[in-house]
Length: 280
Image 1 (cartoon, rainbow, N blue to C red):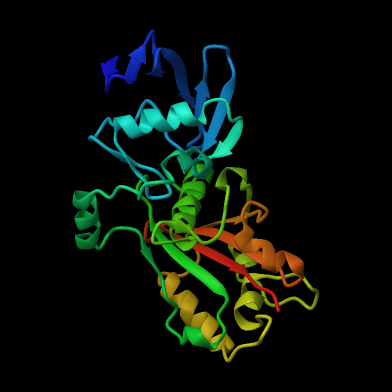
Image 2 (image 1 turned 180 degrees about the horizontal axis):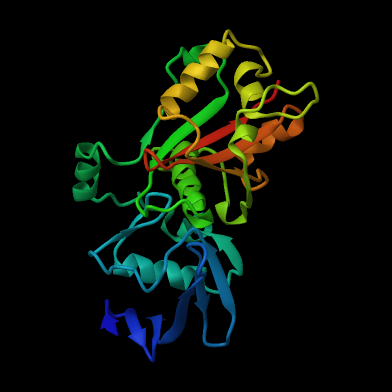
C-alpha cells in the first residue's frame, strides 16, 4: 500500500486493489466487459461506477489517469472519488465526479500537446457538404487502439464519441449513461437500406428527410459514405445501439426517431459512430 497523504492510502492488499480513507477500507474490482468500477465497503455494500476505471490498471503507465469526461486524476483525486462514490449504489462517473464540481477539471499539458501533434488520434468528421442546410446526423471517427471489432471495442468507440459529442469544453450538453447502452450486430446492407415507406427511421431517411427538410440528394448521401468508407463496405462490421440512455435522443423519441450505430472498417482500422435525433 502506498501512503498518498494523511487521509488516503492506495494500492494492493491481500490480492485486492483498495483505497483506505481515514482508516475505512474500500475494495476495488472491475466488471470484465465494460469499464465499470465496483467499490465494496467494509460492510459489504457494493457501488457500481459506470464508465470509470479498471483499478488494476490505474496509474500503471504514469502519474495520472483520465476519465471519459476528460477529468485528469492524480492518486489523491482517485481516492477522493472512491470515498465520495462509496455507498451510492449504481451510478455513472459523472455522479461520482460531482465531488470535484467546485474546481475546474485538471488538464495534463503533456497529453494535450501530444494530442495536438498526433494526427492519428481520435478526430471528428465533417461531411463534405454544407452542414448549415439541415443535417441532423452526427458523425465521429475513432481510431481503433486495440485492433479488435468485438462488442466491447464498439462500446468503447461509442463511449469515446459521446465524451466528445455530448460535451462542450468538458461540460455536459446532454446527460448520458452509456453503461445502459445495448447493441445488436446487423448486416451492412441494413445500415444502407433504402428509405422505407413505413414510419421507421433508418440512416438514409435521417440524412435525406429530417423534420424541417434539407437540400441534400442521394448523390450527397453517397458522397459522405464514400468518404467515410473509401475502400467499400465489404469489410464493415455494424452494431445498432439502443437509445434510451441519453437525453440527446429525447427529441427523436417524441415522433421522428433516433439512430445510433458504430461501424468498424477493417481496411482502415477505425470506427465511425453515427447518431441522429431530431424533432419539429
